[in-house]
Image 1 (spheres, rainbow, N blue to C red):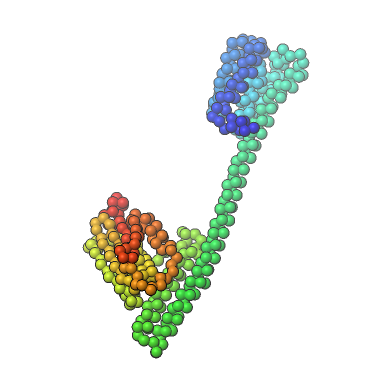
Image 2 (cartoon, rainbow, N blue to C red):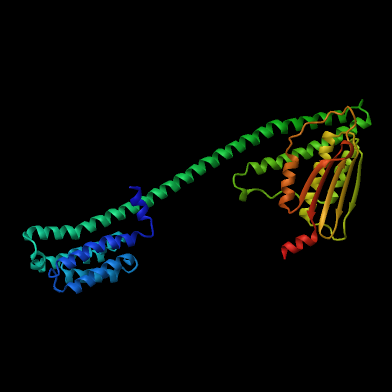
Length: 385
């Protein structure tokens, strides 16, 4: 019955129904012109055509359509004229109108039996057939209404099941995130804490030299910073609803680079810094992003090119801020430290979200260049405007 379902959903369904319904109406009006109270074939034909044409718009003009259908019963004497009107009234839930149509049709059949039986050999059969013609549309209308309600309930049930499935998936994702947070806390957090404790213990030893104590103090400070950052990550990751998340951590400014670069220099790294900022410094978001670009570049140089010279440049123009971190080739015999491989990927996404670009490329002689271009004050003013 796919064709029937397709027809019911088609915009031509009312037109098809009008044709199918109009054919028997017109045939009866032509074949039995004396069956109604107006024994005129022309009048019967006109009212039958009016009922058939009105079938196309019956759902929007049901009251006038019902009045014409009742007139068709009186004029032609055939109860088939109110069939579609009664069906439509029941389907739309207009039970008073449906009851009026049924009562008018049955009263007309009982009050004028000679009209109905004038061309039939058995009056009883004609009267019972009239009752069937009147009451069957009522039953079909109720069935259509129930079917529509069942379809709506099915859609609602599927929507509830989809919501339940989404809730189960969300709960599973939260549980997986909680397990990940626990693993990070138990693994990385404990190892960093142990590193800080060991470095602190060495720093207070009397037999340790000053350079060693200084290096251990640097390790302790870096470890404490890592623990603070890890604590913030764990707090954010454990929050189920982003709306309930605690405020974001502090935003860094360019002046915060000084202690970071100082720690790297104390660790034996050769770092040169060249910063050219206009009297109107970049906005806080740009400064924070520039800070993280520089720290990511220094971290990569420390892991993969230990002992190599690093050059940090920050240039600001009217339209953009350029951040460049360039390191030379690592000295021979160096053993690079492993990384996750995601730092630059995440950083590139953040720079792109801020409206900038980030490029990485090999430098001359085996070095490495990290360069980012961020929107300057003029660009952000234009975006705001």
